[in-house]
Length: 271
Image 1: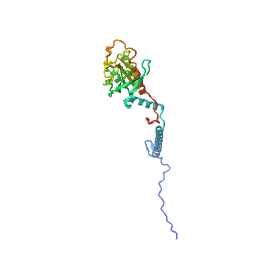
Image 2: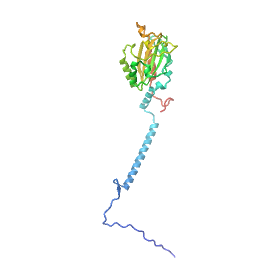
Image 3: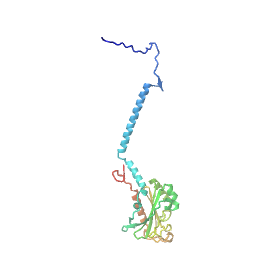
Image 4: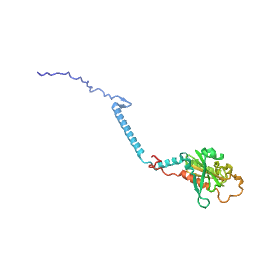
């Protein structure tokens, strides 16, 4: 015997009368639910695309070689921090060659290095505002004697944040000087007991020079080994006894300001 079950018919929604007015779907801020869903999907796709582009750009940036401009900026930063990063013995070598007035080459020897680095203590009071206004960071001093030990020279390395500050200070210092190379404010004498510089004082300074190398100002002050004050010299000294001073400053400044581009494969740089 076959049994057939009869299910009751499913209820049906009442048909809209043909003459009933059409009612639009509900909206929020002018968009229907379907339109909001489409907008959300589009926004999510844009965010994913943006994140993907940013990730790729970041990876490329981290793994590309540095540009020439980036290498140059890194080299400038390295030069500007050498006054504190380098050992003082590298800034002021134990010996420095020089050429006295057309004669054979000679060697100046270092007599001592002062440990203090304050700008106001290193120079005459008249030029302290000039240096500090242009951003003086530090002033390192060392004293050298020429090959005969007859002339002693104090060399100051005045550090600035960048070459622009050093150049402004250099030009202002030139305006403040008398231009004869013997007078005017400069670096203060640095004497070291038990050496040829022991009697060297500020009153003994007979010659001063100034030059610039990168973010550094090089100042020198020279005098005789016996400490005679400049006021006691009534006649010009024979030859050019203080010609050693600008040569020492030039060599120290040239080494400090040398700006080779960083080598990404070297031991001193990480690119």
